[in-house]
Image (cartoon, rainbow, N blue to C red; front, top):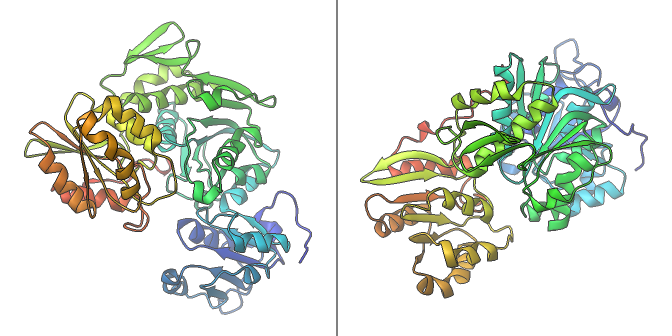
Amino acid sequence: MTVSLPEHLRIQDLAGRRVALWGWGGEGRAAYAALRTSRDSGFGSRDSEGRFIAPLTLFCAAGEAADANAVGDAALQVETEATGEALSAFDVVIKSPGISPNQPEAVFAAQQGTRFLGGTALWFAEHADDGRMARTVCVTGTKGKSTTSSLLAHLLRAAGLRTALAGNIGVPLLELLGAQADAWAVELSSYQTRDVAASGAHPQVAIVTNLHPEHLDWHGSEARYYADKLALVTEVKPRFAVLNAADPLLARLHLPDSEIRWYGDAQGWHLRGDALHRGDVCVMNTATMPLPGQHNRSNLCAVLTALEALGLDALALAPHAACFQPLPNRLQPLGERNGILYVNDSISTTPMATLAALALYADRPVAVLVGGHDRGLPWDEFAEAMKAYAPRAIITMGQNGPRIHALLAPMAAVNGFLLDAARDLADAVAKARAALPEGGVILLSPGAPSFGAYRNYVERGRHFAALAGFDPEAILGINGMGIA
């Protein structure tokens, strides 16, 4: 099947096309709503009795089918098996970000001429008539992108700008299709960055916080993961690229089509201990700011650099970071029980993130809970660090728990830390309690995703809170999402 489609697809370009949705999570539901409310595409047209006219197919998991059918759309055909042959019957498939274009079914259909894209591509194409997008800041990176995006929105609002906070952080961009804002803070995962490139849009600023191996099962290789992540600056070609000078991979980048603004170096925004500097000027002490850990405060440097690229007074806005509300599940202190502090870092899905969490509590006896879904990430660097900076105890769990345990076992006795294996999170918490004296810290920082045992890291964090004796409802959602 070969069809003539514009290079940069907009929703109205779908008129008369055979279109399917793939995935019924938040992004899939947002794409469905965008199509069914669009008259330009034809998918929003109704008959005299109010029924949708244009047929639309949804491929989803069997467990999602009932929810999809419950929308009461007689023109929506719900399928629970997305084969390559079935997908290839469509001109365009709008897929959810978590579905890899590298899986065999998608590759087969693409070879037959099916065009795959995400809702992110449609939103950017709608908002970029002339290509350039003023006061739009895209944020990506292996770690820190949610905190950076939220903090950016917080300071933009402090500047008096009506600001949208959306994207991978939890509000699909298509939910805000047609909405108006003075500025956009858009978080993008590595699953979405090429969607921006496919849209033809050029945001004013793109931030990349850091790069470490992650999502290798989705991307297929470490090199492809980096290439997909960096597409936000190498292919999207923003006006300004805000990059972390302390990251060795980013420090080597040359971007002839963008102006690079570095942070984390002596000339720009950087930290000297707890002191925030702009060049040689000490701006303020960050020790009491609600940004736990040096890596989180580095995110503030990224945000201030981006604000300057937007032409705003970052020096005047920096103190407003003091009233930023930290994000849940990210080094979140839940409180103490029987002299033990419980810290929820469920968002930690790489060994590097676990190392950063351990550094924050280096002066206290810590039992860290590690392990989860195995994506094949190497733990060798983590193991090497344990030779010098091991906590009191390491409790392994989850699918990759045995692999981590086997790697650490030869050094546990030599380097003086307790190593134990747990059946599940409840068992891990119990073993951690037994290993710690009063004044210790139980740190959930798994360094791995939650898939299999939990739907997502939020559910894992809520279970940890309950096991620790705290109300899971206290793990609040992220403040400020949407437009405010």
